[in-house]
Structure formats: C-alpha cells, structure tokens
Length: 181
Image (cartoon, rainbow, N blue to C red):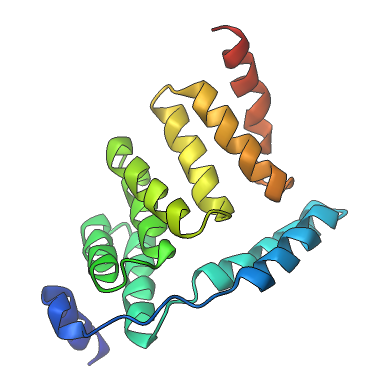
C-alpha cells in the first residue's frame, strides 16, 4: 500500500500539497559541531556525525520523509533512476529542504554525472551552509572535475566544522596540486 501511494505521489507531485518549512536544527547543529571538534577519537566523532545526519535527514513532514526514505532505499539498491525520481519529487514538493538536493547530488555523483551533482550541492549549501556532507560532496565533485584548488578550499571549510571527516586524508594531495599551479 505504501509503495502504491508513493508511486502515485511520484507521478504527480502537485497532489502532494504544500511542504512546511524545514525543521530548524541550527542550535542543535551548533552544539554538535562543538562536540565533534572536541572529540578525542575518530569513533567519538563518528557518533556525533551520525547525530548530525539524523538532523539533516529530518524531513519537513511525513510525506517528504517518505520520498527521502524511498530515494535513499532505491539508491542503496542501485536503482538510481528510481532514486532520482523520488528526490525530484521531494525537491518539487520541498524546494527549501537541503537534503533533497544533497541526496540527488549523491546519486548523480555515483553515476559520475558530476556536472549534474554540482548545482544540487550548491542548492543544498545555500539552504544549509554548514551541511558538512554537502561540502565534502562538493569537494569530491570538484576533484572529479579536476578543479583541485576549489576542492581543497571546500574540503578545508568542511574540516573547520568537522576535523574528523574521512576525506581529511585527501587534503595533502589537493594542497600539493594547488602548489603545482
């Protein structure tokens, strides 16, 4: 039944109604950024990062949450076409919700469609300027587009918020590429 309703909603986002404003988790995220910066181990930092993800993935309402969950499930099953349809519907319904753009960018990144991923990452960051995953995704996308100096800048911005990011190990190579210019 849920999939039938979701299929109907995907086919016609206009039936969905009006999306409420995304939840404001700014204060909670500020606390989590302070906590991750004070973490003493990578494990502690990962636990904090997981709590950040829970906030970013908190959709404005149950309908938006269904599209987000459906898109992520389809992405994990390598159904990229289905994932893109779910994220397209989510973005059409909730254009102010950053995670819809971030997730669609991730699918396009996996598909190696970097030119499509980059604008979505920009949209996500315009709505959530401290979205570390979108920053990191943007850095990786810029790397794939051979725009290493921009990638280094973006990764440094992300590392200022979360110094424990797995991608931190890429920074020395990016900085070396900057010096070669």
